[in-house]
Every structure is written in C-alpha cells, then in structure tokens.
View 1 (cartoon, one colour):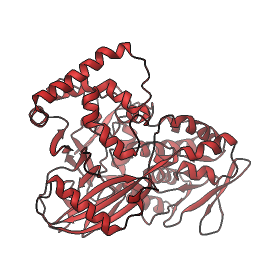
View 2 (cartoon, rainbow, N blue to C red):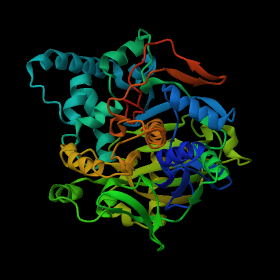
View 3 (tube, rainbow, N blue to C red):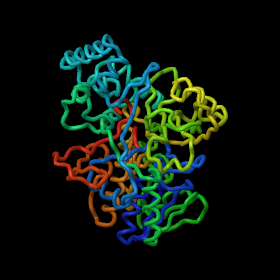
Length: 494
C-alpha cells in the first residue's frame, strides 16, 4: 500500500512512523524545512529552543509506550514551575496557600470564594445554557476568578470575547477541574492530581522535536521518504476515491491512501466543487496566528519558571518561555538565556504585517516591564510568525464543522488528522494518539473514530512516564488528560 502523509507534525509523522513499521510504502510531504510542526526544535544563538513551551504528558499507555520506544533513556524528568503574572504579581500554579493569599490579599481571596459560593447557589435556578466559554467557567469558578484569571488571557489568545468563544474549548482544556478541586488541591485533600496540576514531566535532552526527528530517521530507515520544503497543493480523487496528491512543484504522484494534517479548510478547497452547505461553512471556520519573539538575554539565572502565563491586560504577550530551565543539554556552552514571548493575531491585524525590528523592540519593552529580567541586557531578537496555529472555537463553530466532517467522511482513502487537519485544539499526546489510531485503521482495518480524540476518548490502560520508564497506574481508567493553557493551566506542548 502506498500512503502519502501531508504534514510532518506530531500527528502526521507518528502515523507515517507506524505505517512504515508495518511495511507500508510511505511518503511524507512537509511544507517546512524541518519535521515536528509546532513541536519542532531548532538551533538559535548556540542553543536549542522549541516553538514555545511544549511539555509532554499523557496517561495513555499506548502514547507513553511509543514515546519511550522512540526516546529510550534520552530524556529527563523536569520539576515544573509555572506561574501566572497578574497585576505585577506572580501567582504559583498550582496554587500555594501562602503565595496565593499574599498576592490576592485576604479580602480579595474571600471575595473570590464568596463569588464561587454565590454561583453555586444560583446555578440550580439558572438555565442550563453553558454554551459559551464565559458561562462554562463562571459556573465552575465564580465570576470574580473568571475575570481575574480566565477572561484576559483567553481573549488575548482568541481575539474574541469570551461570550463569543464556544464552551467546547473549556470542556476540552479544563474538563473536570473546578474551584472545588482547586481548593482540595490547595489544602492537600485531593488524592488524584488533576492533569492541570501535574508537577513533573518528561522532556527530551535534545528538545521536544527530538521525538519527531527520530521518527523521521526510522521512517527513512524503513524505506520511506520525507520531502521537506514541498507543500501539497491538493488531493486528487475520482468520484471521491483518492488517487494521488499534487505537490505545488508540479507532478501528480499516485497513492492508495492520503493522511492529511493540512488545515481542513484548505483540504476541502483543493478537492474541487463541494456541496453548497460545505462551501457556505468553509469561510466561517477561522484559524488564529502566532507570533513568537525570541530574545537573547544576558545571564543564566533570570527567573526559575519554565513558562509563565501573562494575564495582565496592559501587556500584549500571553505567554513567556524560559528555555534555560528545561534541561541543561539544550543550553550548550552558552552563558545566556533565550526567552520566547508569545503573541496571537489574525491575518488582518497590524501585528501580522509588522516588521521584525519593531516586534523585537515591543517584546524587549514588555519583558522589561514585568521585572523578570531586571537590568539584564537584551542582546538580540528573532521573530517566527506561525500562520494558522490554533483552530478558533467561536460560538456555534460545530454547526459549520459538522457538514465539512460529513463531507470528508464520504471520501474513500482520505484521513484528516491533527490540530489543523481535524480542527481540534490538540496537544502532543492527542496528536500522537491520532497518528497511532490512523495507522491502525489503514494497516489493520480498525474502525477508530478519529474525530472523537480529544473529545470523549478514553483509554484502556493508565500509566505515566518516570525517570525509570513506564509505570502502570493503579487508578481506574479515566478520560485522556488534557494540557490546559490558562490558569487552568496550552498549554503543551506545544
């Protein structure tokens, strides 16, 4: 069987890796010059850095086993430190009693608790309309905490009001976490640590992209091909039976099956004339862009976090990554620190068209305003714009997505997966799982519902990665845990 995989991000490269191991003839077409997608690692100023913070964590034994098979012993367990920057104060996350009370003050803490209790009293008498992110979060945390720790960050990320953001985002990224579980964790009463509160994680010694670089090596060793800097224009089909892919550089190449991680809107547009309801839905699905600004800062010990969330509305950035605090191997011989400041925008926003020097000046000014780097010199800057990095869960988006999904399911030999390909806000673990299941569907005739991953998926075995390898978890199987990217914990990575 000849299989084309469009895109070498976590989902695509995992699917290709698993199919190559099963003897399929696999070719990967990647528009970038490296594998890994938004989880790639690259060299900068003598060090290695990722595309923002991309920790890996999963309780799914299938995902963990694959990750360990690829990495062997070439990883370290990292003690996580993540904080929230809000109104010139730093809140530890997970919450620590003294730090939380000191930063909030007893009065404000009491008001947050009062707001939560008030919400719990009125919830039974309110309508069950929790279709928006705002309504969903307020119902679980109270309005005061929503406005402090959810509203500003989420609106920076998505560029729309929390009233216009669908509750699916909260349901996928926060799930069972609530004010009640936060209080239990704060008091040490919660026996089962929520995924948002996990305080150690496995990280490759060569950066998170090392996983996918090794998968690419294995694919080539098995006879597969990986075409870098070769974007695909469209998938060719006859009467909805996939026949080939057409790279932008010309020649059509025949394949029996195509796995696509390209944005779902682009995939559909390339398939030719679609039903009217599909054509009407396409422009209503939107993607958010990321602008990553890397700063080369003098000194090693600037601040101890791996990453921070910026919830202050007077700063445009949403997240800060400090690569000095992941594993020492990625720092090389450098005595300086690389920080990544993360901003988000749409195509028509001014930031997307801004020149690099202006963006670097903005980032240097904002990081200085936080006090995190003191008077340390900013030696240099580097900008990476990433188009269509997040599928936007605007309110009612599923009404537009459903007819597109139904249309794509009518094709024989086509499997859309990944964050962009399935229009799902996946983390690495979800994308790896999608790749695994896609390979099983194609090579073994399984019938996994890939659209259900990161929605209501569950796993049969529970485990976790430790410094000694895979450890089975004695707890009952539960829903696949998610990375959360607000003070819930986006988180990542990614």
